[in-house]
Length: 468
Image (cartoon, rainbow, N blue to C red):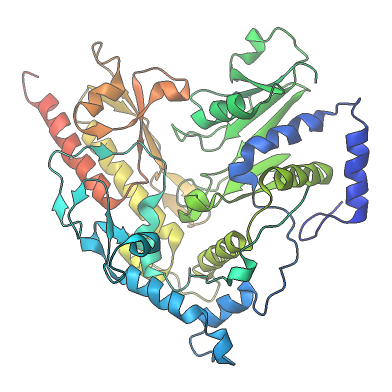
């Protein structure tokens, strides 16, 4: 049953009604599609799109007109986007000393509508973000991928979409023992949090997938195994561990992109989910998509999501489409090849987002490995160079995160060791690991990473002085 690009037809609705009526029969897939509700952050890019609301313009038309500078408006009634575009360009041009940004909501809330109100990056203050905050903590705990800011500044026009207000509306749609949700530790902590928060008696967190079979009392317990490849936080490759007839793996490929991991293996799993977040850095869109082998399961997930969040706005879909078109355009067949080891800024100018991301991440990871290797107090998870089919050559590792451990007996609380030295990381216990581990995010802004470098050089330097 095909569901892509279509509203639910009568046959599909009849199928769903028949499934609801047959409440006495619990299929294996029923377990999965209920769980899919927990992935609303990843799966809310629906597999079908309803027709646009009535409007004189649609997002595609507006997008084309903005991208084509030579296009002429047919009448003054279609020049509604000009003031908004001018405002956006004005705000973007004000750089806040390169250490902050101006947002439309801040300007609108200001007493003076002509005043530029800078929202400063961490560790900077002042009306123009020109003043560094002394002894500021380096924040490398968040997974928010803000490293792409410089890329999109260089590609602002290509990634911009202006949507008419009339289409900023949504697409609408409509056990027994709790099933266990598991993941191999260390595992993304939000999985456990979502299961506990939204399980509603149908799901419970089952813990570490490696030990689940030894701990479960009922061998017939239905299980959802969450597999993140590469894994967050250690960025190692992952595969399904549970070989059980009533186990259903869900593969999360949030980080499986050429700039973070060589695409060396073609996956063909029953359920695979993706997100725009780590691809382009637009985590705030909360937009992702999924592939299902079973079309009935895809239909059930679509209906569940439609009824739970009232659908997805055309504004969000249009923005995501424009971003993906920009990514694809950077690698169209008619583009000339570029040298591989250019500075990241050069790749941003060329619109090569995968080259840009790889250049930034590989440089940061190499520096972190080099500096931590100076002291026996710390260890960092190592990754080796691999052949990248996308780039057509061997590439240095460029992970989104670094998994770091504290080796001294007295440093059992690794998080506190770094925090006491001005570096805020993500504690290992949150991932189900030992307190001797922490996660460093490499997805931060340059300003955050510069502060990290300063604090880390001081910390490691103190440990390498003879007698320490």
